[in-house]
Image (tube, rainbow, N blue to C red; front, side, top):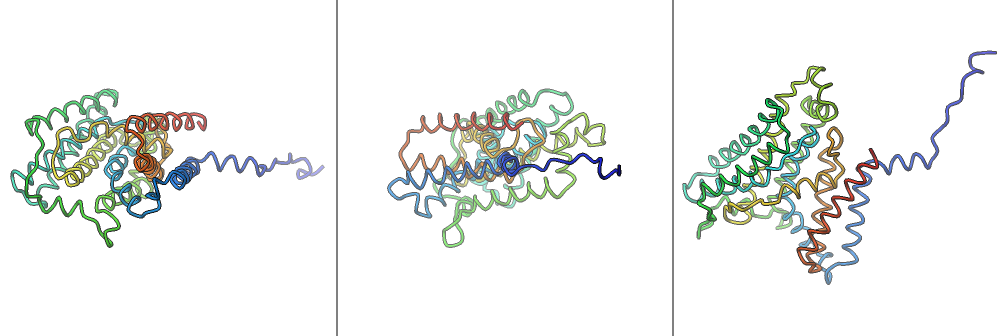
Length: 331
């Protein structure tokens, strides 16, 4: 008998099994969820408001600040971490940027780099404590959340920083381009998204992030500079928090020490609903874009239908739980 006649035939996957495999992909689930949300918007359109471009433009503008935070949060979560301080760092930067521009009359070319550096330093401080002293990210970033909020209130004396004469940089950041069809803040979010995508998919740095999130000890034994990478990942999250803080101050035309409260929860919700695993090592910023659209449209649809804020918050919480349960089932 020839060897060919003794070969055990392999079973070809059925069409149904292939379909289930495709449907189990996070991006497919996120796209289906987004399609469902848009379908709900077409039905519950708020007296035709959902059919107007201005509604979609405003939804993107309102969610963009949260989405910028979510870009940094995505990288942190991919590295099996968490950052609860991004909302407070946003508030600190909003106050600092307003003080530099409104009170001290710094130019935008000096104020923006200074605020970006401050945000990155806040993130790097958290990353250093996590990497060097092996403290849980939840504890470290919770401490940074409280510290940054206290510092924002300290330097502002607990008051909002504003001026009767709006600084030009605020007007520029809060403006719309392309025939008033897209806001500058939305373009800033897309730029942050592209930066993260390039870093995670085209650079060695991105492979290191996924390796740490998948198995930190294996990554360390493979020569990955885990300590430096963790510091860098949290510094990047702090940098994006600074970007979001600058945009928030420009949108509100003031620096509010209370700005950004609970924003970290929305950023985490965007990442999780998009499909990035909270366990680390699986996901990406493409999924974060889908999560941004889902959260943005859910909030806008509820808003144009005059749903009370309390009900909107409860629904968002329920959506997060469902997203986590779907992830566990896939795992």
